[in-house]
Length: 234
Image 1 (cartoon, rainbow, N blue to C red):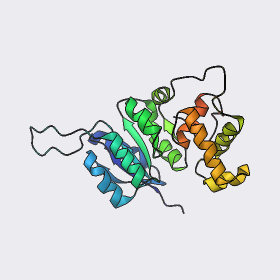
Image 2 (cartoon, rainbow, N blue to C red):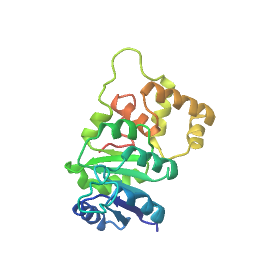
Image 3 (cartoon, rainbow, N blue to C red):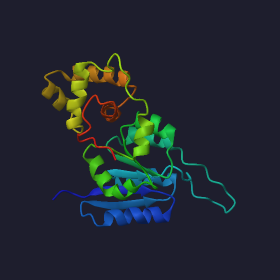
Image 4 (cartoon, one colour):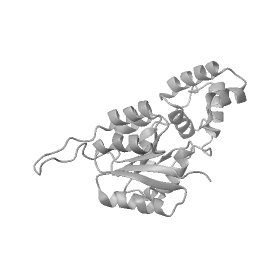
């Protein structure tokens, strides 16, 4: 039997943590192994449990208040997700927040392979959190509509295509099995891994992204590849 997906949730609102626990409680294929209420709890919990998925709030204190009149520092979102990406590249991050934060969307998602989901707490899709967890552990992504609009707000203009036919073909094939290795995709395409990486590097530059996740999403948004792939949106 496959072991359950392990989850750590960091949110300064007890009701949100309780809601997360309730949403996953009925699933026998996932378990909430750790909870935190401020940013400083993140890495101790990650080190202790090494979860498959991290559910992360953005607008929360970095430290617990040491005195009643103390105003704690805000959670430094981008440095923390960048550190997560460096130290635990295999862990999927789902952001669950009240706010659409453009810097996190444009700098975080486009340049950080860990961030696989971004749900707004006010969005009905937040009730699909177990589905989002299941999807990101299989290599997919899950974003609220407002996040997708902010992420890819510029439609493709008529004129010269952004990608070559070969680049579009490669991204389309990778999108079908995004968790597979470069070696696997290179074999399917009948090319060397170095050639595959070169094609993707040129495609990333043309699309203005820095990861395969962002490249697939942008290609779907622009209609370069079909949206009906394993990289579903939320």
